[in-house]
Image (cartoon, rainbow over all chains, first blue to last red; front, top):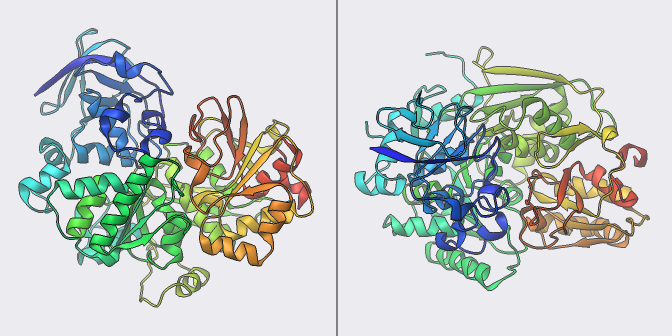
Length: 167
Length: 419
């Protein structure tokens, strides 16, 4: 399946406090309420700039900081189809796979704000349609891909009825 | 397969009953799991969503209300109630408001033991590595699935070794060491890796001081910050549990992705400047920056030794008239000890405000949100923009001694002149 949308470009070390501030996340688990605050300390009106299917594109260490799963959840809930970054922090990476938010690890220096991108996870490529460039994605371990393809760990667990690793 | 193993490889191999090495993805039984009030409500929702109606082993589960305790609003109260009701229904361990910060309580109550695999739905779960426990932060879905199945999937991490050599100068504490290491490795210098800390400096530190370093290993991206279990640490654990445990040392020829050696004999106190934890300078480069608020506490530096050192500096003195100093002890036990030792009296007489044991102002929800343009000197582990609830404030991180000295003078101050 190909995901297609526009790039919203951020820098290095975007932490989970920036993605969703601690001052909001403790008072509700309703993602409708939380997702309007996505990235607001970095870009105040960001939620309203997103069109369904768009991508967040960032530099190194995206998602560093706390373990809050609200971070990938609000990104997904806001209509972002995948996060593309040079590298990701560990807990954010794990949480994203667990909730079924695709993450794409490629060098992002050449992707600009507003570039039209197409991501194919099965084929492992990011196409920059604006710049006519193709980037290859580092492939995910099979198990993680299976969890992602199931739509997250909850669905995986429901589908296979177990937490065994199924190849 | 290499026969020489890191601490992480040994812990996982023993749990699985077969030899495993870094890079493998495995499913393993989890020895203990924890959630706090920012992450547990979502885990409860997920637990119910997968159709689970039983916790695999409720004795291995603890919930802690620490991030927003006592509750500042109706909405937060509703989530706290959800946690209490769920805990009552399934008979898990539960630590309500006032008990303290999860990362103080889990080792203090003997829940996390050497050689175990422990998860916590909080990024600073890596703290218990200081007592040779493979402990790591996860999200709410992981916690939910682990509660239901008793297991979780892990990638066995590659390891990095950090050796601290020399002798520790006066006025330089484990917090300064942690900041100095993070400065050198950067905020993602250990991403996904298990870090093993060792060397004469680590040996010389108290167990409490070691927790500070393991706690901050996630600030360079690490999965866990492990240390060997020496006699000192073994005694610390034995004072808190009657359970049997096993500890692990790395093999001589174990594979490390990188080995760093730091001689810290000439180290100065360190300060992390806004807005990243790896933006670190020696204190002599930032002395004199005015501050309006101090924070002494958090899972990094809210322990009895931290309060002791701050009180020794503040005793019979007054904090600067333009400064508020907030003190949040890491746990009820810490608070009681501090009261018995006269520490709380000294701090309050100096002008400090003591709040309930918990995470308090560190996470920006209540108990001391700074105003626009204000500078805060804090013993916490994060200084991200907006972290304390105001994205127009500036957070500097330092040791408890640095915070105490700075609060007296109303500006960032080298604590060595007070020691």
